Image 1 (cartoon, rainbow, N blue to C red):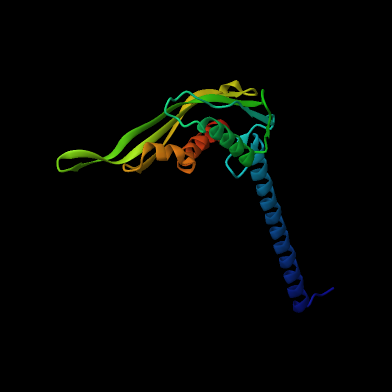
Image 2 (image 1 turned 90 degrees about the horizontal axis):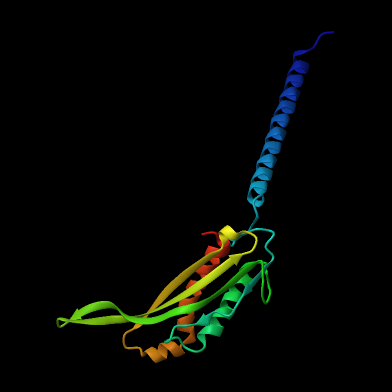
Length: 198
């Protein structure tokens, strides 16, 4: 049986197409395996989410006792406001269920400092004057992770905000929004330390 040049050329083209299809198919399988490996790596050691939390799947609940105020200068609303904001932050950023006590992770503590100090000192006519006043808030937190005792901690978190030196201390104390900006930084730091492992 003799093959014409035309038939041989068609056979070669067919084999090349089959070979090319095989290579593409192998690459597609390789990419699928790569994606599967990446997804298993991300989910293999706990629950990872894109808001930065890395919470053990065994942890399903959290409890936050009222964060008391021991700082003598702190306004009366601060205890309740800080505690509720801390609860809200965890509810918004995790899927954990809030329970009254004995959660898988537990928080308690107190606001230990609420202090004003002069800041941005400037010399005016050879006299040192404060360009602003700085309010510093410190919160001592005890965190218990009942599933991993090594992750538990006892730590003081701190943040501050600057206000015009002409603004009265009482006016700042009565401005819940201004104080809340400072406490929100503390809450973010507590969250990051306890469940985001930062």
